[in-house]
Length: 379
Image (cartoon, rainbow, N blue to C red; front, side, top):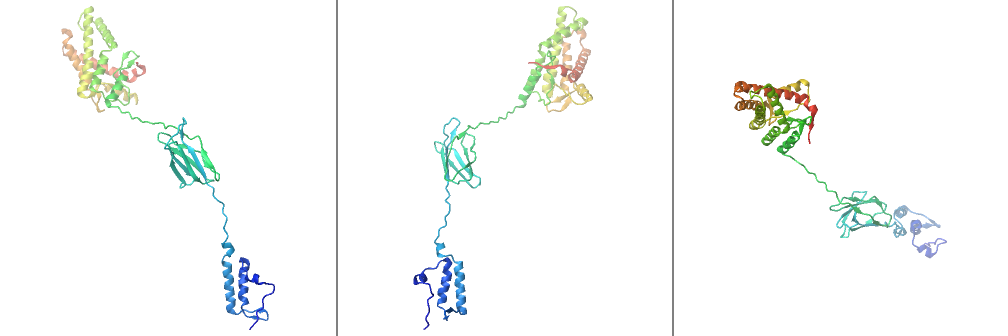
């Protein structure tokens, strides 16, 4: 048998000591080779032993050492924080059952809770170093939002001065008026229209969007004109002029003046009631003059000249003015009942009809070009 000499300088304890990462592979390799053939104190490895040693060496380099497997890697502990608070109103009273939301910069980092009966809420495990915002909503109150909150590790944050304000109620009211209500308001405006603030100018429409008159409003407007004090003064002035010209043939004196006054008043009343209320109601026509005010002078003159012969229907279309023409003709015919016998007849009828129609033409021209400038609204 061959004698295997022990390497010098190594004790049995050292040879039996477990190998470490640094010396383990070498020691394993040495231990293996010591069992190999030795010749004259030197190691001689055959091919199989060489590859076995090489495999052991590579395996030792790739595998972690037992000391490393047994080591724990020290990691810093994440110390989370807390946010608490109490929801109150502007008077300092607590607001129960408010919805409190904790929102981070990440959309997925969001938590909500409902405050208790005392308005208290709390959020735990809040990550430090991340900006958060508290948002509070409650029934009957406006939303409240905190400034950005960034906690220090382990910080316990008490959020103070949470005061939600009472939500302002906004009510939208849609007011709709019927056509009759709008027309009534427009007539109220027209009833205050006076030339120089004195003379009635009720039958002129300046509104760019007029509404057709109802039958009630047509009679109301006609009676307003017929009973106006200035109308009575106008009848008295006309009667005085006729008295001076001794026409119609009532003679002179106060009795004759009274007859002329009564005849002129009857003419005016029958004309305005028939032509301004009765026929317009039956024929569904509007007896008023619609002020144009824009366009060329030629178009405005034409508009004024045709008014006695054309009027606006209740549907807004233009049609023959049967109401005014019929009213003038009917009033002239009725005058045969009370005029002196010497003045009666067909001539009286058509004379008065012609005078009334001419007056409407002159009045329309004045409305379009003159009276608008001296038109005042009464109070």
